[in-house]
View 1 (cartoon, rainbow, N blue to C red):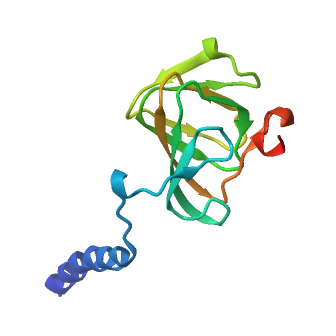
View 2 (spheres, rainbow, N blue to C red; view 1 turned 90 degrees about the horizontal axis):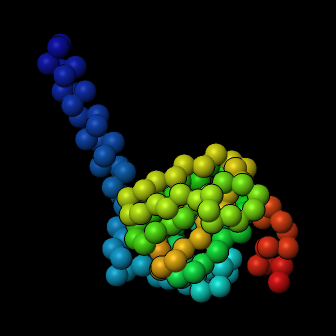
Length: 150
């Protein structure tokens, strides 16, 4: 009987892993399909998993141009940002104040809770990866800063 229990326990993780690999996503940098990111002139986005406007997990990369400025805003859900290249200057608050930012390099991670007011800027081209639970949304602290309304 104990041998049967051990065999069942060992088989369970393998069976679970085999099921999850039937929907595997592998994305190399060369295979990403970049498109214009309408929320920031000159920025591009590559969605790896999910759809930005649908419920479910989303993985997306955003390529920010040099001298990009992302006005203060917030998101309805938790947002996880990983810096992949360049320097991502991140700050909290209702005004874009470069002197109140933290410079984050490759490998740095930010985890923001819903509705946290924050902003960002770059000096060089910077690539970040977003991991969120969709649908993804953005609300600008000052509605006049929303590029969708210009």
